[in-house]
Length: 317
Image (tube, rainbow, N blue to C red; front, top):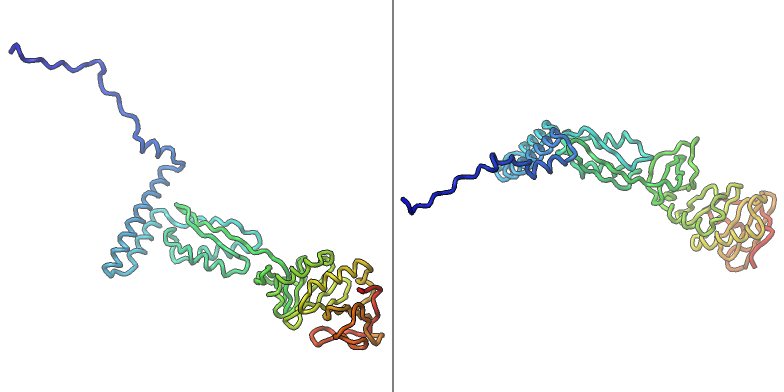
């Protein structure tokens, strides 16, 4: 029919349609810095983990034993998600093999089955470890980061030497032939007083290097022993002020290394000094008061006794 319109013939100008380029998903996958095999294991593990979660929930709802979830996690392990490496960071003093042993103490080598909280709790039982972080890095690595305690002193009690931190936490035994260059605190309860002892020495920093050891006496006060052999008995209250006064006396006219045996400052008003056993009475420097009298020994039963004494060459007015 003359009135019918003819359809235009399809254009042949373009020829065959141009092939499409790679999809957006394939382009993104090509940028991931892992091999296709590893990516396949990760994806497979994720699928198994998701299926395991769903089936474990269904098993609990239906009353099926929890072995179903364990079997699924073991299946993920067989698919390649097993603990093959343990990366430990932050460790410098504690034995590294002890950390490995704790991390490997698992019922299963499946990475998905590792109880991270339980590993951390076991690590915190070690004195050296102040804190620990445990995590997974798929496909095969368990990460352990440790924060160690810092040794602050050596504690001597009952003939045993132990390294402690500033809070008195026991770190490890100390070999008597290899004692580290740290303060030595002596006596029952001295380990729990390390913080107060550090604060005490801060009152007279010029004497810190001259102190050999500190004995915690009667669970209430300190006796300091200097490297030159003298003992300084400090009061129960105001020990830092008494030590600062002693440091001032030592600066004005040396007392240490001059043959004195013991200095007694348990009475904050005065300093009582003793020399060898020949003299009969201690000499008193400072104000009088209601404390010891001139011919009285300075002992109160909680510190080593002294012999005779002579006065130091200076005192406080």
